[in-house]
Length: 258
Figure 1 (tube, helix red, strand yellow):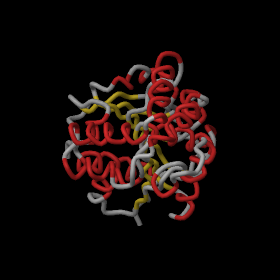
Figure 2 (cartoon, rainbow, N blue to C red):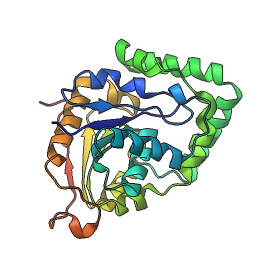
Figure 3 (tube, rainbow, N blue to C red):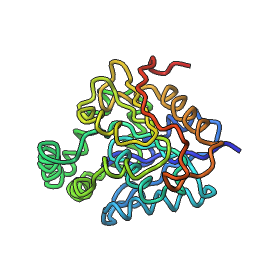
């Protein structure tokens, strides 16, 4: 049986955003909603609760899975891998290599306050941005589970309280960092890469933060390859159990290359 893949969605959207990618997969997968989003809208958001949702879904799938997250989902994936290395066979973290501190945190706190004051308007603007940036079916998948703009401030605070670089350093498993070549969230990618025990960095040429997901088949191929890579590796819960060769590599493949 193929290694299950658990996808983690971005801020204010829901697990439905992964529908177009999951439709290209042959093996088992899941895309749970995080607290405050989608089917869990209205529940308070914090990082421990978010990681618990992911861990519970992995347990339901047999206790071991590749975790793939985008934007907020990438930060949640990193946090989950550090907290539950026995459950996370490998990690694909997309669009999440900016440290949530300083100017980055300030900008998102401001955006969060504005979104919370006018969630309906923020939702309409978000939906418009998705339609402008993504192919029709993918844009529809992003909005199908609703847009929980009111939860943005608490999400921003929860992410800002984390140290994703330290979390990556605490995780002994395989990590794929994936960024659009034009994504501003690339800003700290080299520091994130250096923190990985066994990591690689992939750039998607010409893609921005959001448009990195404009080719669902390409993302599915990338994630399936990652799952196939870690599937035969026994669970690694400590650095003593990690492969003896630990190195970082940078790959710049053609986007969606088969």
